[in-house]
Image (tube, rainbow, N blue to C red; front, side, top):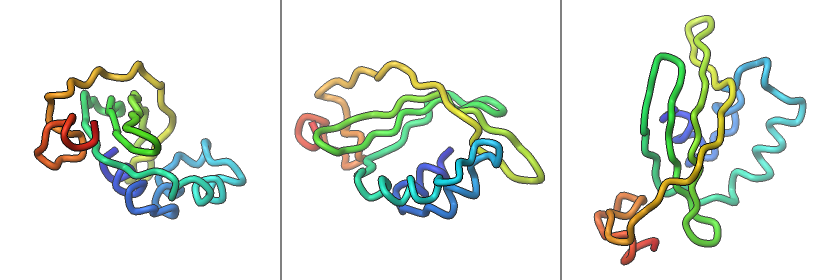
Length: 114
């Protein structure tokens, strides 16, 4: 999960495509990624729970204000590699204004991205 998040941050379309399970790939997958990947400023990733082939995470990003992607992702290990299969969107987590900012600056959320 962390490597795919990093690939989104770095706009590494090839890595995202290569780690998507082959059964999930659409004919226009690369072009869809290319059309949208530069529109998001990723701020941070928090892993909430991880099991053998499941990861629950929240990824924070900024478009117009701070947004979050809270998902339980499913992965499959095949031929020595992990592949992203699918994910279930989950309810957004509540952030307190006095919590550390999601970007990792060390500042409180209200003084940084809040």
